[in-house]
Length: 512
View 1: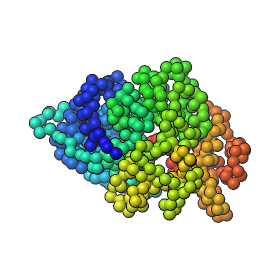
View 2: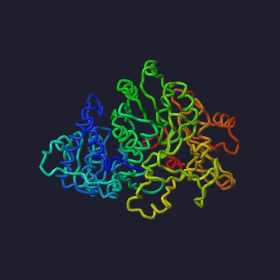
View 3: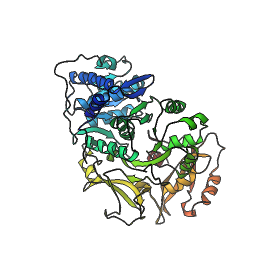
């Protein structure tokens, strides 16, 4: 594959040269043009260089969605640093581990997270902290972002020298066991994803993306942030997901054409009483769903409500930069994650990595320019995950005659009861179809007589009637074989979830 740019800064520089007045970012009441974005990135890059940051230094970002996040992202790239975007919902102890593991030298953060980030200089390798909004009272090397932006220009301007195969990003995955691992992504990894997204959606400079999902997440970064810039389009940055009514309002007012969400968002949309004018006058042509599986019930209800737009389910993982497959606008298949993006190969294989026949279930593996460079400082884990250029995803799936991919379940979530395979997702699909159930998760618990037994955790829709365990089982028995019925049903006020709405089954198992 041929790539237009060697690094991120080349991309925004090209846009500034070819279309300087085009608005690339809308945030609150502010509009930022392509030229203004580059000028602000240049200013902050000067500060980073004057602060001693140099080639390959790791700089972390722990902020809300903001213009400062975007400026920092490109400025770090310009000076040849490695960007480390980190989940802003973690605790201090978790930050200490990640920052030390990544050998981060500088942190860009917000007063909102001062309790978790304010004292990290004492316990990590961080030399300086930049605050995007307000300086804390504690001592240390602290700087205000607005002051950093006033760094004077000099004759020897910083020049970017990174190429496609260089390390661009360290994305820390939420590990199923032990500590999270740093996924090393190159510029080529990310650009392959962005190129694949442009091809699949047939995007152009008129397209506008709404960015309300966390910008630290690889899905948001590649598809919501970098993709619109790559095609010369625009993005609308929403600092907070709440109130959700603001997202609806901005989608309408800013004429958003591509709306990225997670199943939780689409579950909420089909339950919400949306104003008639939003349904009539919104400009969205594609709703994209990722992060976790979209239930068939939500998909069916969504298509009835939004008749002029397509909802496209996709699939990805951080190790693949992250998008792997998505349904084309021209043809979608319910419960399918669609076709591989341009230039990627997908196979379904058995335990010996031998490809299985069409419609047979096996592990999904991926090959292409999206495949990560490896796990940071973890060669053994890298060798276990990447086999002859193929990433083992750990997901069980199948492929139909037309090449459309279906995810059956996580390999580690498979429940084997009395020697029979039980796929939790199949049970969850039925649970999601119940009007009173907002979210559901099925896990396997060890059992002396059966090997494992399925149990279900349920989060009820607050507006719906209460539900009993016996009522849930009666409902399930109308749709599933008896051996698939969970032995126990537990009701929680809220299921534990990741930032992208994926239920944390590991936490459920640990607390069972």
